[in-house]
Length: 83
Image (cartoon, rainbow, N blue to C red; front, side, top):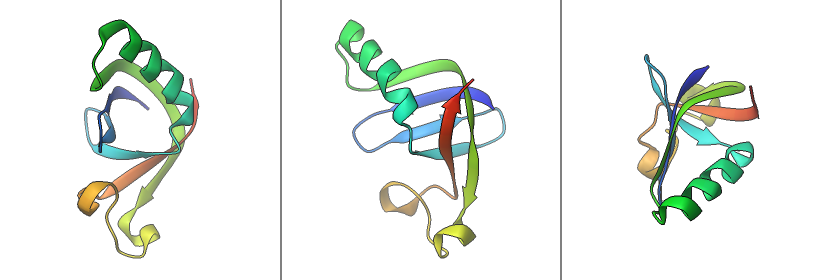
């Protein structure tokens, strides 16, 4: 999947043309986020055209609970690698 990644204090989300997902296990993205934070000086970071290989998780797989802060995300992506 290719889309946009947003990182902030409580938000780690992946946005495609169709849906918005909470990011779980985004360790492979952290280096890219930290690099952008160093250059921009901002904590809120947006990365465009990021290609992610991962698994989509639903509320049903999370015992009926949403993902992220206050459970506001219906789906999450468990990042396995970047492509």
